[in-house]
Amino acid sequence: MTKKQRIDTAIRGGKVDHVPVIFSLHFPESDHRGKQAIEAHRNFYKATDVDAVKVMNENLFRTDVAIRTPEDWRSVRPITGKESYVQDQLDIVKALADEIGHEAYLYTTIHGIFASAFHATGDSDDKLARNDKLTAHLKESPEIMISALKNIAEGIAIFTQLCIEAGSHGIYYAALGAEKYRFSKEMFNDFIKPNDLLILDSAANASAGVVLHMCKDSLNIDMYKDYPVEIVNWAVHENNPALSEGRRIFPQTILGGFDDREGELVHGSSAQIAEKVSRLIAEMGSEKFIVGADCTLPTEIEYSRVRGVVDAVRSI
Image (cartoon, rainbow, N blue to C red; front, side, top):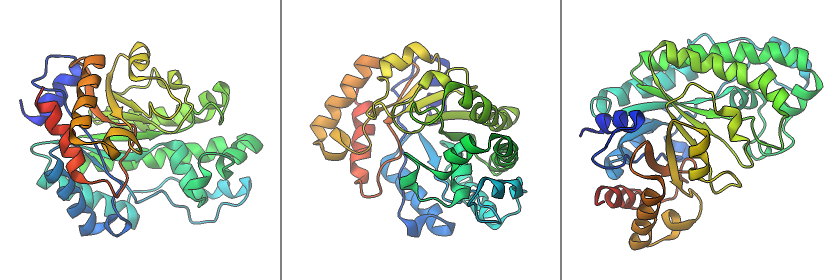
């Protein structure tokens, strides 16, 4: 099987020659944009031989005005696709599509509605877990925020379409908002879900595949159970349901298994990595399963560890 055939078969639930493997990496800041980003993705792919490529996206959504109060959100408008940071991301996608796209699927990272709006606030990532400005504004001024979020979602939908036109075969959608400590189910359904679906529809309209990554800890993952996606992924090691439990919620193909911060992949020997692979495949089976991690791997991890997972899977 080719890599694309392997992914397609895993999505359909057919018999694969071996379970596919997908990992991604947080590249150093010096490799976030331009030619350096292209080279970093290329080197990771060649060194690890993974079955598909997640294109990282450090070109984050921006606004023309500083967001300090709920009133500031009134000025937020959809991106047009002509912004310099959008063009930089499209250049990365185009180059990788030319170099790698003939043999492996590219899934461009699309930061979901909550993440994109959070980026607009300028808050540091350490505030994303608790007490962030965006969550406070949503609860304080819902009538303002519902319009602002729709504007952002419309722009991200345009960006999604442009990435697919640039050569991406699908998107890797990073969803936030279903953390148990963040919103009630009602708030999630009012503010987050409609905008997530607006963006996901833009991928569906372009016949693009979707990997849904459910970010963070303590998730109500069933809030995502009817999202129109092909592959699902979440951090099982962050106070979230096990893969086998998720199998009862999601009929789609499941991606995951390894902790991206601790455990065998980060600290284990080659033998321990291989043993972990064997346990995962014994637990999940070889159909509708892709070996991967809870989230994107840390910058400092050795590529040989990822290649060790790939080799172990292909030896079974």
